[in-house]
Length: 437
Image (cartoon, rainbow, N blue to C red; front, side, top):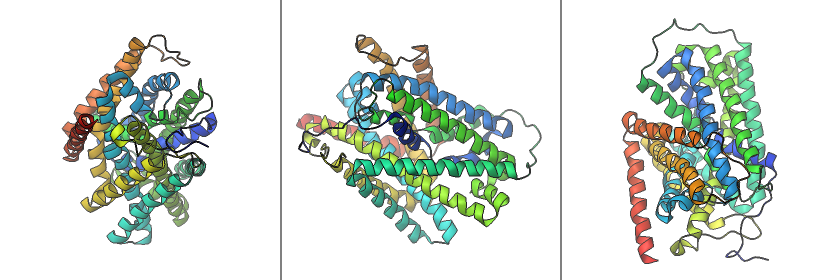
């Protein structure tokens, strides 16, 4: 039997199971929270078009990551691509941003979102909501420490249940009478479109995380292509159908001003049972999103600490549980801290969006640039999957990422600066570790 110091990920995932896991990494009920913001920003004629655009652009970006995941499979996923292309410093900074900002911040966002929905249904006070959010994060951390199959099986079941729940909301949009729409309005300003796309891309965000499964998918040639392309295609259909149903059933004004549009729609169609259904879907979806994010972040943290001698004690893959146990516990601890801090702000969802967005787009740009650099520096590396229209696809996505980076600082709150500050602290911390090594 391997010791924890020598154990490593094993290829145990079928492509279909990997696709469900990847879908769970992207799909979440934050689309229910973002739909009113998008509707208020652009109006009904542009509303669905931007959701379709978000899916298409995400698929274009994902194709470059599929190529890199098939050519350079590693539990670190995007971290390993950036490190291989740009060196240890940027690779380490990426891992820090995921550990201290992006992934743990997402766990906090989802935990507070679940607490808000469940608390509203059960008339909880602030203290009860915070305790629920913390308990949810702690429970999912323990699940992923217990055994890899337990965490992965739970994720597949949760994703299937959430997809069925979203389909029920689409059905509600078909049952109710179509709501009246506002007369044609002038095209939205570029700033309004930018705000809408920040929230839409947040809903689609997570497709790059699927690369962390590349060392565990059985089919090293086509497994990641099936998982990534299949999950984004399914998600696009779900999101477009869901947002069409909410716009049709509620109308532009009601959707833009609703705090729980899916519940409002289901309530109109099915009464209290419909509202209860949406509460259940939100609960399951947030649990699935928290679970998948812990899966991803623990693997990125494992890979990064594996490459940093000063932190190598964290990089232990348990030989029987099949999990990066210490990395998972570290991720859980930071997630609990951010969950508590974001709840204390009184606007947990918006605070976490501001905190995460600029850092996310910075590293998306670097990840896309890595696809081009690795083609140049490793031309003989076997690539079972190649990005079509190369380098047009990655170059166009780099341009988009840089614009979204600018827009996040221009249109979001002070949280954007907090996220950048935390990343700067991480850069100093990594510099000290490098000097120590």
